[in-house]
Length: 296
Image 1 (cartoon, helix red, strand yellow):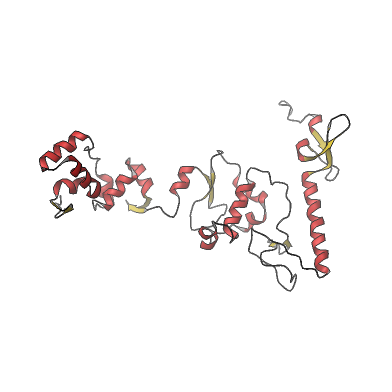
Image 2 (cartoon, rainbow, N blue to C red):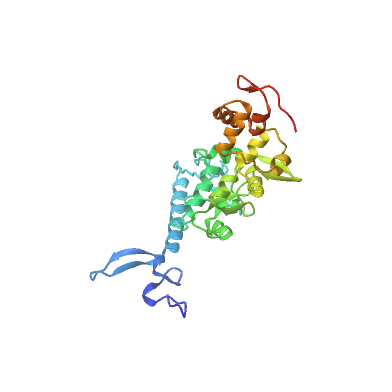
C-alpha cells in the first residue's frame, strides 16, 4: 500500500464481477496458474461466492423438502427449533430463528471462518448452547446464554467487542451469573480470568464487598496469609487486614522461642503451621492439641 495516498497498487487489487467493486487480491479465491506460471483468481470475491453458495444450498434443501424427502440437518450452536407444522422432518436445533422471525440454516457462509476471533465466537456458542459440549454443564446448564444479536451474527460480535488489546487476552464475563452480552463481556488477562470465577471467596470490609485476593492485594499481604488469619486464628476481617505482618520467619526466632517454651524448633514449626503463630506460643498443648487459648 502507498503510505502517502493510502491506495493499494493496481497489481494487488481486482474487480469483482458480482458486486462491481474493486477489492484486495486476498479477497478472492485462487484459481490455479496460467501457462506462464502467473497466479489466477476467480472473478467473484469470497463474500459474493459465500452468498451465492448459501442461496443455492437453501434452494436445494427447500426442493428436497417439497418433494417429501427427510433431510437430516444438525446444528451444534443453537437449541432453537421451528414449528413442526412448517417443516416436520427437521429435528430439534436444526434452524436458527432471527429477530425478524425468518429461519435460516445454521451453516450459512459468511466468509470469516479464518478470522482470528471466529474460534472464540464459536466456542462461546458451543459451551452455552450445545449439550454435547464438555463445558455445557458449567455454562448452558447454569442458564448462561449468548445474546441473540451475537448468536445470529459473527459480524455483530466483532463490531461490539473489537480486537483483543493483547493476543494473550480471552473473553470474560464481568458477572459470572449472567450471559454473554455487550454490557457484561470484556477482554481479560489470565490474572483477571483466574480471579473472576465461582470459586472466589467474598469478604465484607469497610462496607464494601471484596474478593479475598483483591483485598489481600489492596492491603499488601499474601492471600494465603489473610485466609489463615481468618480461618486458623479466628480473626475478624478488619483485624486480619489491619494486623501488621509478624517477623518470626527466620530460623533464629524459631530456635529462641522454642527454647523458651522447652520444645524443639520442629515441634514449634508444626504447631505454627497447624494453628498459627499466636496460638502456638500462648497455648499449652496436650498430644499436639491446644488446651486453652489466651485472648489478647
